[in-house]
Length: 108
Length: 208
Image (cartoon, rainbow over all chains, first blue to last red):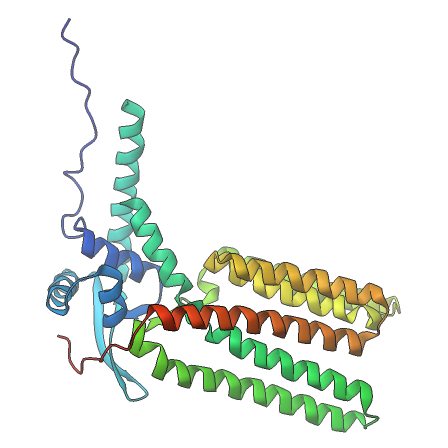
């Protein structure tokens, strides 16, 4: 009576660059707005400046976000925004998560 | 995880309303409009003079918005950072709603003019509907209950004032004043909570 083990959908196919809690939060925020600055992202992710810088650099290197240094009045801002490539990648990632969640629930 | 992502997105969308400055500046503009309608009702001035006063209110509203943004740069961005919201027309559903509402309102106005129906008495209801629509759109985007409440308040007050027979000027003045008071109340509560929960962060000149 060995039932064949149920094949659960895995998350092995997801983009590992995005599938990291802080980076996925960064992309989620940027997907909802035109742009957000370093301080806002730092508060939202709860990361230190150094860690956030590393994550942003990785996302920028992958072509998912652009980082622009600018001024708002006299206030220096480091503005981040999502690229088209980043939008698509994040959309695909969310889709994969949803499929995983739906099929995972269905198997229970 | 999905819920966390959604919550982060929602907070980012609501950020424009997080510091209470939008409500406070809206309250000031509403107050100015109320004063304008009162002046129009009380004073017997020429149409040219009223046009000039209205233009002054319009310029003042523009100035208040600029002042709000200037103050926000100094008070909010240093505390909780800067977020630039998406443009309204990027959401196709919102754009469709805006176009449909504008067409309906224009159609209604044209119909009443062509048929010679007196709509002046209904001006508070029309203005209330317009405000309600604007707030409902903002509520839909931000999912903030208080903005939906404001929309319902404007609609109900506008219709009530139109039915009360106070006339279009007193009605519009009371509608503006009522909306402004609710905006002030929301603005003060939101601002107080925001100032309590946040503190100024020294902005780094170079994070990277």
